[in-house]
Length: 280
Image (cartoon, rainbow, N blue to C red; front, side, top):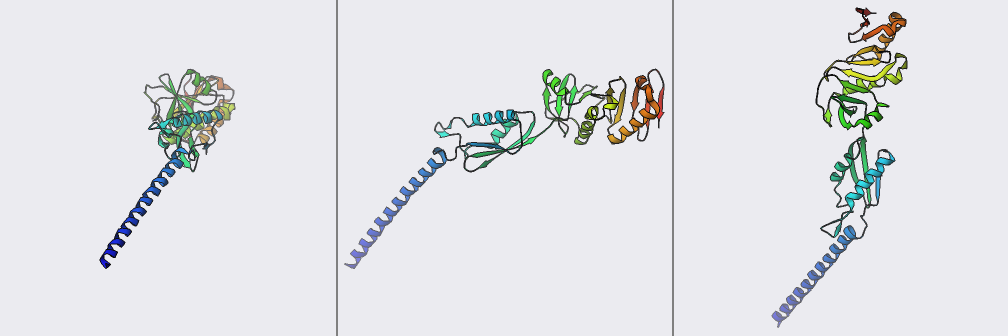
């Protein structure tokens, strides 16, 4: 009789355990189903806000927002919405946005629960225009040619940026770092001289013999040119130039052919049809 009772207890415990397992798995399925619904179909994680950390123009903001919304359209596997904070492929969108604007160097997208994307943009500005073999590019402060200009864009940027032309033949492509960042800074300084030092009558155009050249030529409205060294401080060379123009050239500026500032602590100049002279 005792053995039968034990058997009944075991059977009862087995039935109870089976019921509990069934209940557990039923609850688990309900939980997983509810979780999937909340995260993928309820709209809780649907992206509703797109914010920018760096200031960009209203036009670029609209272009970026449109590109992101286009990426969020449609469904995965024909029934899971793409517009979902969990499922969005930030890297893919980052690469797409970097191609949208010539002023954007890098885009980093971060997610903020439950419905927000935050875009951090690295903005680059053209320091000068670089032209070679009839092709012209915007160059940033790192010396990278990051955007090729067509004729209309070239005319537009000429109003605000200096133009550097390479005399020699060379092939340059977008994304190529054509000069060092140090040289790019020097060229940027020179590029601002026409506005900063109007008394010299600088044109907003320069000439390079080669990318490795240690000097750069600058034209003036009067027709004579100045040869600057890229290895000496620009401010120091400007003081020497000012001194020579005031003390030695005087009212003979229109007779000048060039002034050469390449030699440290010295200056050479030449009048049209005359021999070269050394200045103080």
